[in-house]
Image 1 (tube, rainbow, N blue to C red):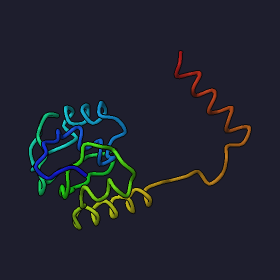
Image 2: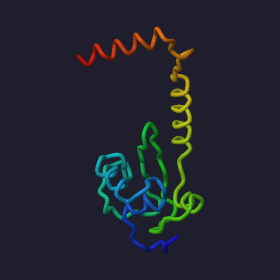
Image 3: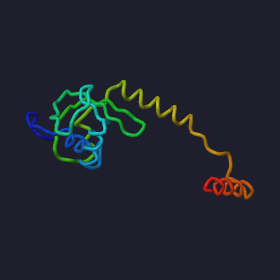
Image 4: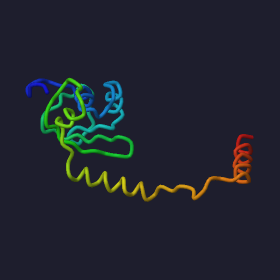
Length: 129
């Protein structure tokens, strides 16, 4: 981890904290409004401060994290988890949403038989015309 008085860009911190695989993806997410800094949209060049609150939207999940430390180097997952702390409310909300998605998941009771496959193929061919 870096010195506490060092200036770290938001996109670089998100990359170092392993929220995104590359800095380019982190930049796209910030510009797309998927990351909010202290409740407001921000730019990639925003300097991250310890104690700042970030709302990060990743897929179906939205995480609210508090910045605990600064780093400009990407390390392993255990080191990355020391850079932030997710709020209790955020954890509870994500777990509840995951449970709801799991309940809504519907799977067919069986595989389609030969007659069903012919009907499906006929429907797809009809839609292409």
